[in-house]
Image (cartoon, rainbow, N blue to C red; front, side, top):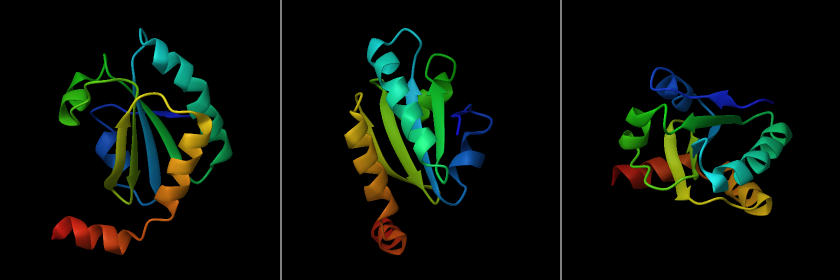
Length: 117
């Protein structure tokens, strides 16, 4: 599955959907972003049930500011409309796969209950 490009116009629609959305905040000039891109693409090809999306931080300053992106790449995981993971830095493929499995395993009722308290 190819990645989806997120913009200020479509971010909420994609992020608020049911399921998992993995977001890569990146920029063209960023060396670590370029090294992480193939890792992200390989995972996208392995997990058809997950939306893999990219946000170009230079083109989407509003989104970068909204989420306080100060370092790129930043990986964000959203499940059922809730941000459940956000971490700057390029990660190895095994780490990305581990994050995906942890996000899949979340008890979202418990996550929501904890977020409300």
